[in-house]
Image 1: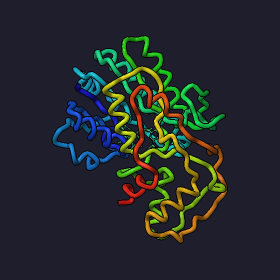
Image 2: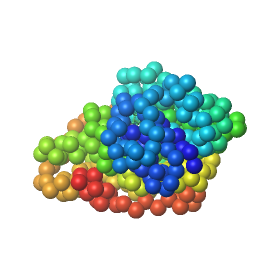
Image 3: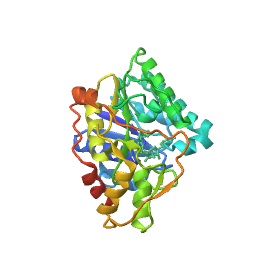
Length: 301
Ligand SMILES: NC(=O)c1ccc[n+]([C@@H]2O[C@H](COP(=O)([O-])OP(=O)(O)OC[C@H]3O[C@@H](n4cnc5c(N)ncnc54)[C@H](O)[C@@H]3O)[C@@H](O)[C@H]2O)c1
């Protein structure tokens, strides 16, 4: 199959691109490298068409979509806190960018469109584990841009293209970038590496569903191949407390005595999270294999 992956030089995208290449597909990767790195693709760079460019460049996108069977759309700005400071930019890239890609995909005769969304669309869940049929309730601009892009995917299902939405939970693993906006595992790893205590906001008893990037990318590659319309949760199906995460990471990094410091909880933070992944298991045979301890070991290495 000929597959166009947007955001393919990013953390998750690069793992997906590798798997699709190893499965024998023709890959076109579009990424403007705002957070991604060409280096993330070094294992497969000679086997793909890598294009440095922006998903908002309609002429470029039209050219790349010619003859494509599937679009896997991961390109996005991904920071919740930054989205509150830059709402228009987040809307332009995450929501309008997805709409443009959907429209150009239809015009180009692409049959299948996979959109990578986020568990952030659920907001503070009313029950655990979270099912795809549970209500969505975005609490941030980032979550709102993903929810509205999902709505466009749903609308386009009746316009000649099949769309599949994957709601990713907290993905971690090798190549995850580190910045002030990074997720909790990058933050903790960086501080623990420097011998600084990880900072926990709140009491540390809040839970998250951490999914190893290798498991997530394998599921995504299968979803691209098997394709099925609908919305699917993608997580580990297990939850860990943030305090437990800090302890496991400290042990893994050989600093078991490093105690976290606690700060005021951040407003709008979700208390509990865990994905019900039975739909992805049934349709795509999704079975996450890497435990949190093993995944942290691989990440630290
Ligand atoms: N990491 C997670 O835990 C997580 C959780 C839920 C959803 N997601 C989603 O998964 C996808 C990949 O996220 P990631 O964690 O790999 O982040 P990432 O920042 O590493 O990947 C995003 C990629 O998109 C590219 N990009 C951004 N704007 C672009 C534009 N205008 N044109 C072309 N390329 C552009 C970036 O350069 C980057 O390579 C995103 O859609 C994100 O919202 C990630």
